[in-house]
Length: 312
Image (cartoon, one colour):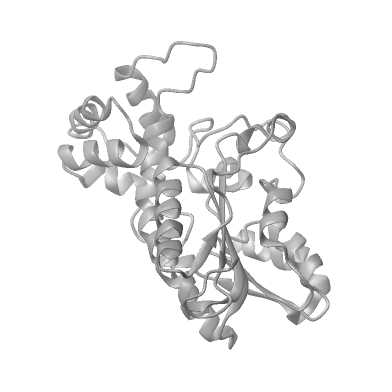
């Protein structure tokens, strides 16, 4: 997801679907909230304002810089906001480290922060030339350049098609393998130009850069985004309190599909009631103010108030 970088807010990211998040989570004083992707603290700030005094907000993020920013932004609540550099797939470990047995509210915004897109060190954007990295967690060892250099042609094509529905996946993979035999592909500009050479531009008014889906798929692969989301979805029913609520904001059909199926399975097991029959999307006002949110989809569920009895 690469966007126009004009009008970036001072705090580096605009919280998406904030009003909808608060409406569906319905936070109250004294509750424990788990923000699985705290980022720059936009959603966490709103949750803290709602659950304080007496509440607790656990802020989790893999990006240490974003987490440090969130700590500063939420500093007024002191120990009532706690911070953990971790992947949300480690949510159960975070709760154990925090000494918390269960939470009332769970939020996971699965998008990339605007500031991460604009920072060269991540190499997420082809708008500037930067190392082909794409790691959001600096502790990861495999970069996008590593995948481009080492994956066999078929695996590259399958990755592009599966993660980003790139219809030209085989053509792109073939070209990558051809080029890398003589020239290492190590920068965002190199990869973007390579893709543009073999992918025809899309017709119509709302054109996207031909390299967009390739960059999306690589980022998702490097950060194991779908695998980690699947792990989180397995854990949520284990640590959310009776009557608790969970909300997920996805930006990709694969993510949304995982969330939808998990919630339907929870509901079929009488563990929750799905609150969103269809995903909630930003309205025209929000999209105009924050064009990057146009692909956001929110789904929410309320968990059973007692074992085996779904909320009414």
